[in-house]
Every structure is written in structure tokens, then in C-alpha cells.
Image (cartoon, rainbow, N blue to C red):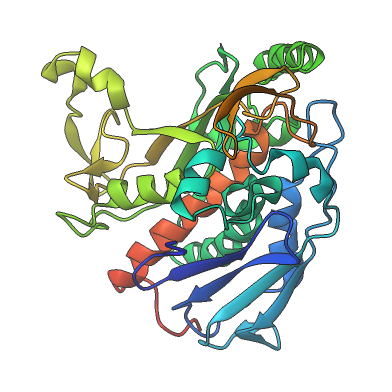
Length: 363
């Protein structure tokens, strides 16, 4: 299993959904960065389920503990180990599912990959639970990026086919925290919530789209041809369970227009080169061009639903029906918003360190 990401700023995840704990080991973080458990905790709290009927009943406090790499409120330059205990597990819900893979989950592929020895409780290493570690590491990366003026934020752009209206980046950043869905369009958010409640009542689930935005990125980040900025960022985003698609800028729509419509005209503004439009999404040739980096992430509907589904019994090799009894979100999109921010932060931090833009000692 490949548990690490990054070349200079690296993260290595550990733990399973229903194990004793989960966590993250960060390597390559410069010394001298001021950081506290309370700051990391603030980011983790954004990922917690909320009190509406569409969130999972599982309630973890996600209390982060710093085990190494931070002394007297500053990073030491040594590996940073962050741990989060699992307390509200209910593994009995999965006892009957060990040999009956849940449709839409990684149960079957994990069973084949690890010969049936993998931790199946709550999805084990394939559960969205592991993203708490991503968010903890993302908090460290976010602070490092702030030292060079890079700001990252994400919002819910769509749920269940209901799309938020197009808005300026400033408006999105200002309004996205006004509701529990992280949607900057309050009218669309109300419609999304209604759709979620209807899906929940029928025992079903919904997916959606998250838009991640990074501003203040200098031109030149990226290591072509195989360590492209967009390629490595897509890899990080695809590590988030339930992500099924990633596009940058115009994305797939670029295939539907003419070159004259897709090209971004260049101009000089305040002594720097910018583009009048941003169909490239801030990346050309795998290298940042100085414009805002815009990524859209497609998140599939939660596969654990209350409806009866068709599956197989792997021991008896017979077809069967399955009813999932565990505790699950009707839609993981809102809780994945801070995870998207974290993975974008981790990727950009790694590339900034590789380019020498972030100092090895923060003063």
C-alpha cells in the first residue's frame, strides 16, 4: 500500500476507520513555523459532521495530539506526527459485511488486493475517516503558504445537480461559510438542503462538485514533464475517497470550444503578465502561470445507502442482497470541502519548497 505523498513536503498516513487511531506524519516541514494544536483543531472542526439530518450520526471529537516535531509552539524541522483517536466506533455494523462487498465501495477490490486480510470495519483505510489526517497536515501546509502570500479556499459548487450561481472569487470566499454546506449561493444552498432531506427520507444519497481555489501563486511552480503541478494536484485530490473526477480551469469544456474562445489573452498589469481570462485555471504546461488556480472536483454519491442492493457472497460465491446498517452521510461533499483545501495546500507547499520559494527556516 502506498501511504506517502510529496517529494520535499511529504505526508504519510496511518490508521484505519475503526482502529485505535488515525494520523499523519509530515516530513520536510521547515523549522521555525509558529503553530499550535488549537490552529490545527480549528481546521479539523470544519470537517466534522454537523447537526442536520443529512450528516452521519457518528460523532468523533477529532481531538488532535502533537506527538513530535513541534516544541514551544514552533516546528523544529523534525518529522511532525499528528494523531487523532477513534472513540465513536461501532464495528458490529460491519460483521455481516466482511464477505459481502458493498456496491460502490472498495470492499471487493481491497479483498482481492489484500487476500481478505484488510481491515474491513468502516471501510478501513478506504474510509473517508482517514481524511482527518489530511486536514491536519493541510493546516501545517496552509500556514507555510501564508508566509509567501498564497491563500486557498474551496466551496460547494453543486449537489444533486443543483448548481450554485457563478460569483467572483472574493464573493465566494466571503459567503461560503454562511451555511453548513459551504455553498456561497444561499438560494442554491436551500435547494440543495431540500434535495438532501428528500434523498435521506428515501434511503438514498447524493453527490456533487467542489471548487477549489488558490490565489497568490507565483508563476513557475511545477516540474514538467512528469511532476506537473496539475498532475500531482490531481493525484492528491484523487486520494480523497469518493472523488471520481478532477478538472482545471475550463476543463472538459475546453474540448467543446474553438481555440480562439479557449485561449487566454495576455496583458501587462502593474508590471506583471496576467491573462484577461482564466480558462487555463492557473496552469499551463504543468506550470503555474500566476493566475488563480481553479480546480473542480467531482464527488460521487455516498455508496452506503439504506436501500436494499444486489451483491455477492465471496465465501459461497453466490449472489445475494445486502442492507447496510452503518452510520453514513447522505452526501460527503460539504465535509470534503476542507479536505480539498488541505490536499491543494499540501501539493502547493511541496512545489513551493522544491522551488526554494519557502525558506527552510521561517523567521
